[in-house]
Length: 338
Image (cartoon, rainbow, N blue to C red; front, side, top):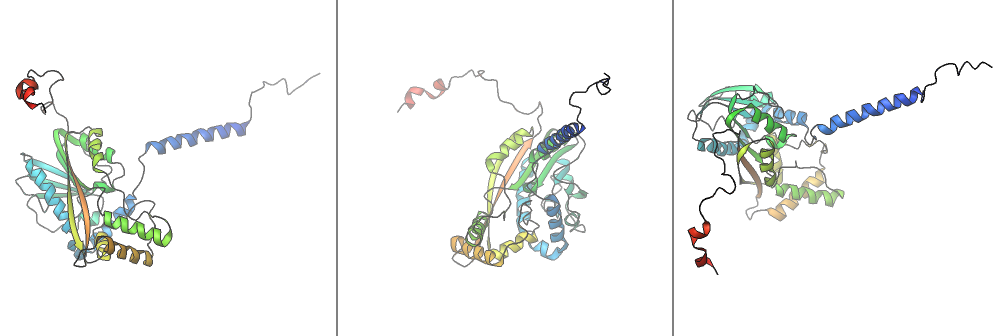
């Protein structure tokens, strides 16, 4: 008997739907790995750009709340001045409206390149006169692109706390620095606005039975050194400062934060806050933290960091075991026994 079906070569698992399903699973796995390799997005960068531009578009209101960023920029410039060098060009990442440009002078540098992703904020004070030459560039802080080993110094003042990929940003800065180039940064620390955070959480629990993402998560001081080391920066120096500002009420504090362009930009943020929750938080804030004169304090913790690109000319610790002097002989150990 003739079996025409058996005369053809038999393919094992000749089921096209299975092959298609297998291929789709491979593509899904590849997409999953690509997403896993990408930095986790905590902040909505597009929303933050719009917030900064909207705040800067109200120029008079925006200038009234420059007090905090101007103060931090002045303290950052003091740390730049402590380095006994004069730089030809300094690049500022996240320059905003030019707070650092107001604090530096020609004893520190010849030119300052201000980089920010918000063009309206960058151009708000374009007609102002500064002590140094200023150049403005639209650059995203998360992806600062410069020629390798082309920059002597890079600074960043109160912008890094909105960056999703801090290690990636610092690595790009390290690549752009010349050997023995310096990075100096300032960012809000984890204890910033702890009064506001606590008050909003208690109000959310009381009114809605849960906690919402009202205040941005911030970096802890202990993690900053690890970030600098991971990026390949050495001789790191970290110090913390706290700035206390008094406001008439919590509503005035929130209004100033929005006018600074520092409103909530967390991806999972709620689009609004209910009136009764806001008023409850204001009452809790005043009851728990209020001053005797009726004002409320707001704490801004600022973390300052300095890191250097490695260079053979930098000081290095001696090799282990190379000491030639006994500490016991130097301090006469017997006389120090209790």
